[in-house]
Amino acid sequence: METKITTMRLTGQCKNHFEHWYYEKYYKSFIKSKFLVDYHFGGFFDSFYELNDSMQYGVYVDFFDSVKIVIELQVRTTPTMQGGSFTCIRPSILSVGKFYNVGASFVVRDRARTEAIKKANEIYNKQQIIANVKKPNANIL
Image 1 (cartoon, rainbow, N blue to C red):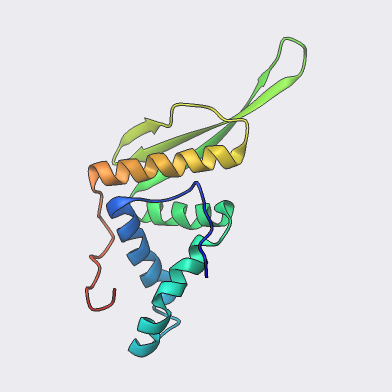
Image 2: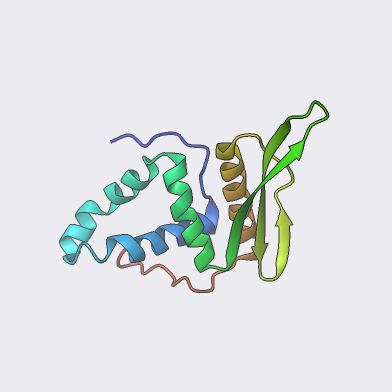
């Protein structure tokens, strides 16, 4: 099975810790046999990465919430001089009492989500926030 190409990818420790969290939260409870875990483990992540970005986004937000990185998309509507309005979406992130602005506003929600996840991934990897995430067990992975 081939994994689809997506713009919403985690990297480094963030990816490793996310996959461990995802395994613990969603996979482990379904598969009790060690044989089945070893046999199906790779396909489990393939099926996640094949989801469309909006579905992955929801799971990523849950993961980042679990490690105290809060992602927020703020929708703002601004009146124009012609009497209409312009709507933009601005992602922001709060982590360990610090506010991070993603740096841009977007007209399309998909792009705002993608940029928010990229920034949260960067923050996670830079600060190595590992609270509430167990270290992967080498026997499982």
